Amino acid sequence: MRLTVIGTGYVGAVHAACMADIGHEVLGVDIDAERIAALTSGRPPFYEPGLSEMLVKAVTTGRLSFSTSLAEAASFADTHFICVGTPQHPTTGAADLSHVEAAVNGLAPYLHDSGYERILVVGKSTVPVGTADRLAGRLHAAAPRAELAWNPEFLREGCAVQDTLRPERLVVGARSEQAEARLREIYAPLLDGGTPFIGTDPATAELVKLASNSFLATKISFINAMAEICDVTGADVLTLAEAMGQDSRIGPRFLAPGLGFGGSCLPKDIRAFTARAEELGRGESVAFLRQVDEINTRQRSRTVDLARQLVGGSFADRNIAVLGAAFKPRSDDVRDSPALAVADAVRRRGAQVRVHDPEAVDNARAAYPALQFALDVAKACEQADVVLHLTEWPQYQELDPVALAAVVRTPAMVDARNTLDPAAWCSAGWTLRALGRPRLG
Ligand code: UGA
Image 1 (tube, protein in one colour):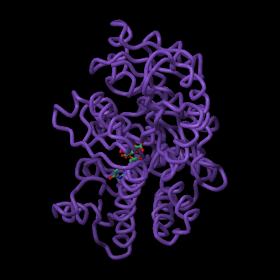
Image 2: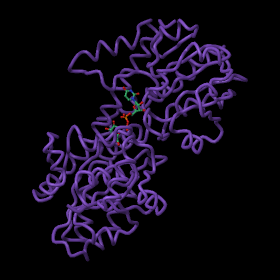
Image 3: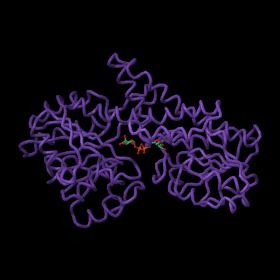
Image 4: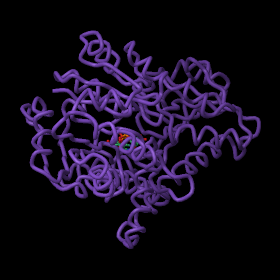
């Protein structure tokens, strides 16, 4: 089938490459000409395992091409996926829908003039509930043969390709059987592989996404709130999480305590959901999400406090090594990165901070020019008074605590992600501290 993907950011670039990979002919469209040029030569605009290879293959076979023209999109295909961003409004926290509106409004006149009998516009962006129905009316007025459906995206950065090719579910909110049938056809290779399909109305589809991200954020903040209780009772949050996770009704995933969540989705989505619920007069229904957000932010200041204790109460003239800048491992994304928020807070309190990350240094430097960066761990840790492990890249688990002890000034470590082996570090002479884990050596 032929289809277009409008917006080639995280969701769009991955969706376009994966749709080409399962056999469709795809045109990716973006207003950013530089990005389109890079994608055309097979270079993704961000680091994502497996994407580069897939892009090169799809572009070389001719199944995937790129353009900056919405007119070309309208004549290329009769199905268009909208994958543009919905950033957070700086003051209200609500979702900024200007990119989604610009894409739909920009495309509509060309759709009107295209020769296609039945046109389907499919939103994948994360939007406030009610957006699809509002935009559908406008789209239909401008292009009467066009229909709007919503098909939220659940991919995680770092495993985006796998999440797109083998999703845990496909959710489609559509107002006609034809629209749902077309999406079933597009996703046929995934459905044949056993992916569950949930067909519903657009409002429910939009809500599935917001509710899922809110639930995940709540689960993380729940265990981090328990870490705060552990800190004043002498209990161990890691054992607590392990025992809770054994209950199959709770499950172990997204129950990893530590520095909390960041990135371009969970923090923004819970704030946008809160703003939308308030608009709908139902603010009290999701009032707990404000606490979820507060608990999450508090873990950043608690990590700073733990580091301050380890350097004797003041950061002035202290050397601090930071391991990790990306908001999570296997990504070079630093948007709302908890690691960089902590690194910068420590710097602002007078410390010399050197940050290491295997992939995210360029993005981190652009976002936080006042921080210093090191290309290897030993350089970051040279003469450090404390090392802060803030993003759990697998290679940090392989570090040799004995060798690193010889590089630092004081062998003191805050493991804010709980993935280092306390026995190995403590027996190499390190003082190890973690939130909610009072019993470490
Ligand atoms: C999240 C959702 O997991 C995806 O399903 C969704 O599609 C995506 O947002 C989106 O809305 O586009 P993502 O932001 O890529 O995906 O990252 P996650 O794997 O969810 O991690 C989010 C944050 O939570 C990271 O900072 C991670 O370190 C943190 N986290 C995760 C914890 O602190 N504890 C955990 O137990 C799990």
